[in-house]
Length: 131
Image (tube, rainbow, N blue to C red; front, side, top):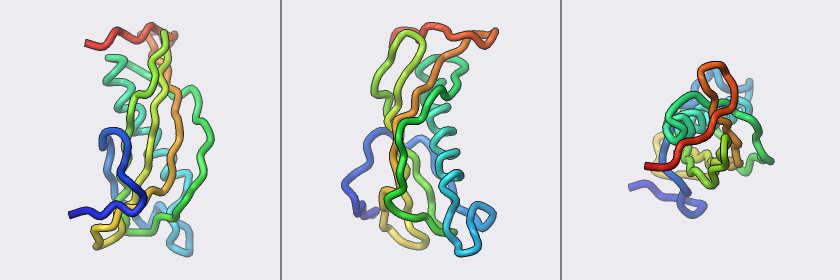
């Protein structure tokens, strides 16, 4: 049974991955850029499903790191489509760390990602209505 230290995640579990030594600095702390890249991957997955096609990241709104991740932690990314415009959508994204060999889950960071749907020529296209 997982124990959530900081409330419960908002959204759907979209990506889980293990933090490895190549993702860390000399002190064993995971690079914030690596965490952000995993969040971007998860947004790409969720937004492409919603747009039924290609998407790109247009913006990432303010992000700060509340807790560090260490080698061996499992990074769990939760996403929620908060708003859909004509060609873009805003996703709420949370990054949680399941601590190594533990049932403890702690929120590492969160942010809003703005994703834009693209057509075959790489131009913005309308996000289809939800079915």
